[in-house]
Length: 82
Image (cartoon, rainbow, N blue to C red; front, side, top):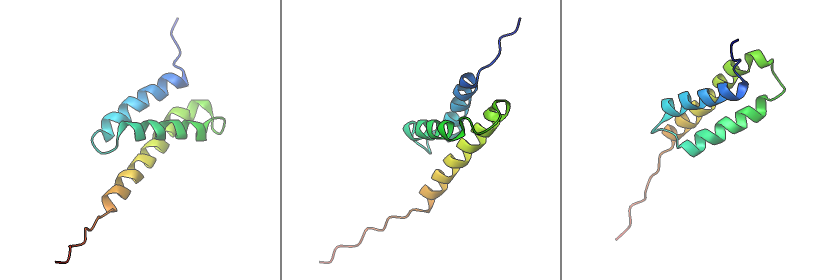
């Protein structure tokens, strides 16, 4: 008898992959929020057999957008007049 993987197992594994991939670029708290929001957004909307791949794709896309947005932000500190 073989043990069947559950979507929860897949999501946990995907979370580990994405945490490793985005380590140092995105805080783990943000990664966790992206994972939870993506799971909520996909629940009941797609075929359970496709959910792991779609979940990974959606989370990775969202995390990449966060990284790119962060890279585009520039902070200019005005010089103080004397």
